[in-house]
Image (cartoon, rainbow, N blue to C red; front, side):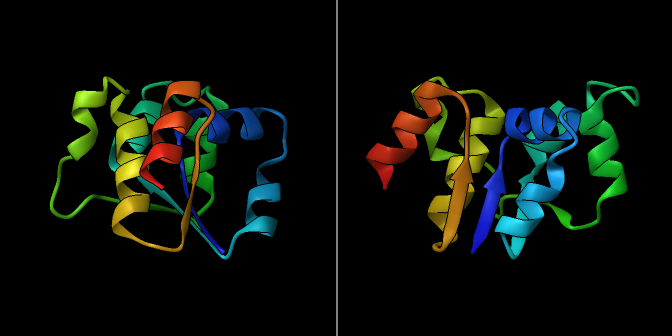
Length: 109
């Protein structure tokens, strides 16, 4: 199984020392560019920042072509890119903690 991960799940699991749970659950985990930028904005002292820098299995990806059809939904850039990646790449599970993003993802299938 493959997953595309948003910032909050990544950061929360890293802070709890449970990031390897993701690795055990999924064969491939991608992190879209908007999510990477959000996580790295936390600075080197942040657990999410350290996780992205330390774990090569957290695969950084960019949407090609860039942009998301979901901008009109008023979700954050990270949430929009996670859902857009999942829509463009069937077989990926979207890891989202935001209620509005989860509802949008459910509606979009």
